[in-house]
Length: 296
Image (cartoon, rainbow, N blue to C red; front, side):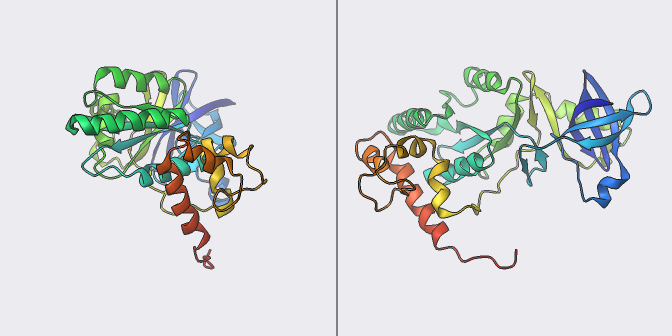
């Protein structure tokens, strides 16, 4: 019995990395009966039947999983955030960060299109990056688009982690991915040939090695439209609110109308970003007023 990680799935086959080798495996028949679908990123126990073939016998517990792309056990997400074209939205960025906090995925904010900014805009984003770094989040604001220094910083953060890239359309997710893993095109071509499946390979998602970590080769992940949480829990997903809340007068303070609220005090004195607080209030109201979904 061996343990490994699924790094690619292809029409019912799962390629598992284990001890520096790749095994082509299938899931046991009872997986389908029990409605268990192995995902890329899953840690599994498997049995080797032939030298490099085998069967997955057991899935090890997942810490999280995404629907788009279908992948499990993500440690970090690079949030590709356009500074312009499309215009920067702090509301969208904060929603993405909350979605990641809910899934226990560590965010890395990577600002794109910084070369299109004038001096005044550059100053604004330098201050913004500093403020998000205080939350604290890892923030990368490249001086030049995709400069080697910022890409190296990003590659260092990959070490031993499983990563995905997310961001709105037009934020440059694919370009960032191609800069991080320039041999991506080559790798996808090689994989198809190695499998003798030619060009008909429908690859859902695969993990690529980058600096002894992994990155998903599909810059998907956009499931942060509706946040399925109770409005009273929202503040827990703002790390700086959570820290401040221990000094609020009331336990369970939601930082809206309560007296002696430390979060509001820190917003007033500039320790907590005004934009983060405003986005919090808007989301709080949205979630509180949401109609229950009885179809679930």
